[in-house]
Image (cartoon, rainbow, N blue to C red; front, side):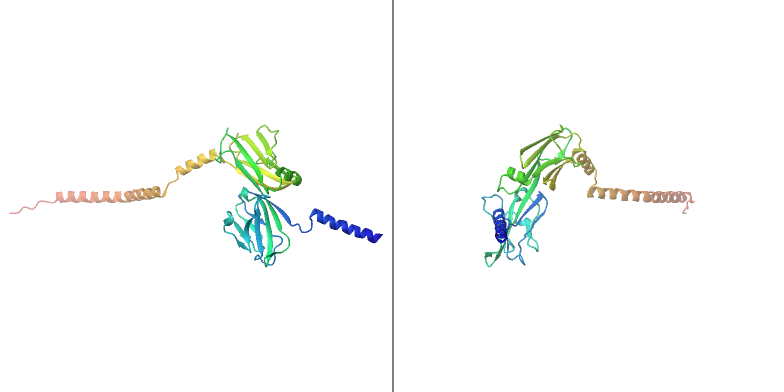
Length: 293
């Protein structure tokens, strides 16, 4: 009886592993802000990268884009200049954009046969934009900021946000969470993966930075900041630049200084020569005149 129970328990464990997909699953989630550099791990890499292939998929039904094959980069892709492989076959992406969000999978091939399962990496990108094309802020101006979360479009964003307990929210320069109850800010969420902040600039010094955070199960994953330039500081910099002497101005100044120095030292010499000439003329005039017979 005990043996039968033991066999039943082993069967349930095996069946559970099949249903949950825990055997052979190799998934990683990476959170990053746009504009930063990111490293995507290849957890199934072999001894070298000659067998490594990296593919990218943005939508569930879209065709996968091959980024690396046999450890060599594909140069016909849009982002090839921003991609590179590390010695452990992990994928580096420089200056991440919102279009980089999606599913990346690392595969190993030996003699044209796939080895093992894919190492899948979900890249989630946080991006902040402004309703204004300019970064300059000024008192009395109303600005709307949009914080959006870009990820793999294989499932509903709302469903994924709920299942993974993802939250997007705005904080001020002091790190305090902004809420709808604060009359200075109008916060709206048209969808679970986007949150907007509308505010009127009251003080140019205290309102130059707004940060959007994303958390997963109450743990901060990444944040991105929108920094505006104060019109006060920019006007001061313009004033400074207008009064900064150029190279031509410096040459003119040097010539004037040299001429002034020359004039200072040359003037006494000229006066002295004039005095000598005058005295010679006086002495010559006093000499007796020789008469010729």
